[in-house]
Amino acid sequence: MHIRPNMRPSPCALTIAGLDPSGGAGVFADLRAFAASHVWGCGAVAVVTVQSTAGIRSSHPIETRRLLDQVRELFSHQNVRAIKIGALGSASNARAIGRWLGSIDDRVPIVLDPVMRASRGARRVRLLEPGAIPALFSIMKRVAVITPNVPESQWLLGATVRTVEDAERAARALVALGPRAALVKGGHLPSPESTEATTDVLAVGRRILHFRAPRVKGALHGTGCVLSSLIAGRLASAGRADDDAIVEAVRWAKQKLRRALAQPLAIGDGLLVVPL
Image (tube, rainbow, N blue to C red; front, side, top):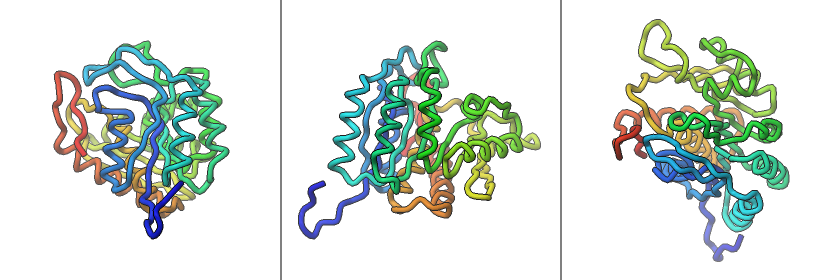
């Protein structure tokens, strides 16, 4: 990395994720979240999709060699201080990114959003091949924070998650697999006590924390991408990823997302999107 004399490099956050042409999710949404976190965003595309806010139509993984060329170039020349990983597309991509992560500075925090399918659109379209599961578990050993929703938690653990207590157990079980912290997003859980609220559960160290927020009415696009990228951007800005820094980053990201969700945007005839 070449820097002019007396010029301190600004922190960058790198996303390795899918390209959503609508701009509502994937790399484009991640870059907006990084900007909202006051860090420079850069992105490597792992899978190209055909989609709009009306839903996904098809998914096409990038050739693994091209993906590695992207991340190596960016990491070699830019001040990457955090990495967010989203949709990787193929098992080959997942394995290659896992090997690459093992070659970089282990002080760089990684936020993993284990995206497998889009929430709306063609049901058969996958954003991660089933054969990528072993590689994903390998990546998890290097992760600072993993941010699955309930279906993704169940897929990773093979356990049912129906209550907040189940989400607590799932978060602890995920941490036992390697990540420093696990945030199980509770949007798919029924609202407790008949109230219109959601509860996300964070396991970090020996702590379990609950983050409650009003349930958003209507379907939105890209909220998971935005949340994980806000966390990664905040960690890049903080320059550390100990337990306290992770708790602060998650709390800040949840507050930032909550404010954005209060004023969603309609940019077409499909799902609403998250403004940042």
